[in-house]
Length: 291
Ligand SMILES: [Zn+2]
Image (tube, rainbow, N blue to C red; front, side, top):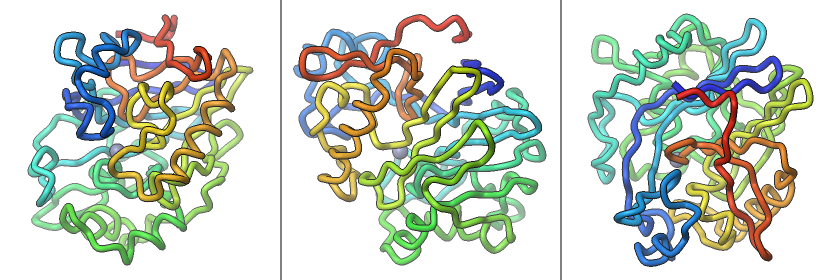
């Protein structure tokens, strides 16, 4: 299991699944030829033979002091997902992986969803006796208020995502609607990164002079750092998403902030480096990257 130590905070990547996707499923411009011509992504972030993206679904789990915070809960098991066959009726061992990482159902103190898309809220709930119940009954579930205002009325195209994975946490009294710049504690806070969705936020971790940021879906694949204007197909507001990617990339191209990509496969991380008038993600070598 991959872990990173950021000062006092330990971050663990808990995998639901890694798949290979055609780049064009996410980014119109990312044809096999283009990806295969982008040397620096081949290997860590894309398959060097086919040019397909390595696309990962995982949670980043942060342990700091007495708190165990889960960032994004992937797609979940048993969900009914019309129009999204790849996420329908999954039977993964994600929860076993969470338990192995020390983030069992009763251990988790907070769940953060960077946004309320289908692949970020799934394990908020699990099926108990035919009903969707919160998977982490002792956690507070932190949902962005702007995000909730949007999705509670937005038509659902991948099944009743809100009804099966968000509302049960609200009904159980575990949810808090929060601002996009909420500070969870001294070391962990949210930063607004709107565009992909209206209330999207990223997650910052800072401790002992070390820094990391969990992207959420402001970027789906590292190739977007070299092509900030490549819009992800699911981006709700393309112009805002581009502006956010630029602001984020310029801000964190600082030689030390670890970028943790919510859908990046392989190492799932890297440092931003300037390259000509664009940027690249350098997976480098991290002493704390284990496995
Ligand atoms: Zn996503």
